[in-house]
Length: 306
Image (cartoon, rainbow, N blue to C red):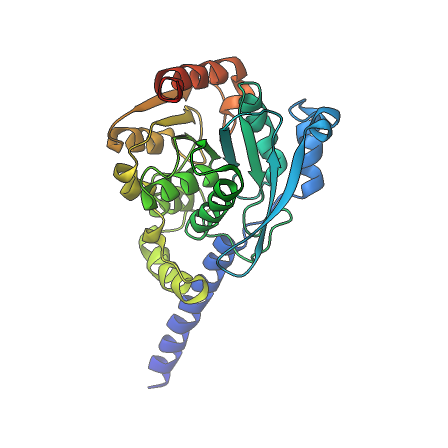
């Protein structure tokens, strides 16, 4: 009897330990300090403070349906009805979005950059890799259309978690935007977790960890691992999608973007950069990256607008 109790207690302790440890890592992934991001982008000449501060922009607070505020910047240098919303990745903030914003500003678009929940100046206490973020994106879009009109040409550009968020939103609201650009998204969160567990030292067996983590996530955060799967949403997106990934990305494999591209029906384009690690396709291949966006816009967006 004593051995049974000790065994039972050991199993219980293991389950609690794994559940808390894993969900803490997922929900509270360590963020980069805002000053670090700021200085990194300035040093790499992707953020010119003088030019950025001179842009005509408005701070906009958008209430999330989950009880916190989202900090947004509506940047409007053009008298045009073309807008793009930039969604950053986990651990980043809106300053990481400036380089992508600049691509579109040069092409006559206005832009919205904003901090996702738990990042930058926005509220929220946990990250959900697109589950709650897609509803926040919906709130930002509603506010943009309330201010600028429902007939705007709207694009959504997302990087990493931001790309997954964009695709999850697009699958939830059919044709919610005029076009999407998904840079290094994961195809499904379960597959991404399996991939990352293999990279642990020592590797952790996903068959042992994920069932426990899944139940703890539901209890603690209100969502489950399989609730975050752009692969299941992609067929609902009828608008054009440009998929981007770096071939050498070992954090989120390029194969995930290939799967998303294959599943997407209708207008689509794929660019696999030869150089660059995770979320570095633009940083390492800026001219090619912008050329691919130009080709995509000219083929699928500008003819519709014209």
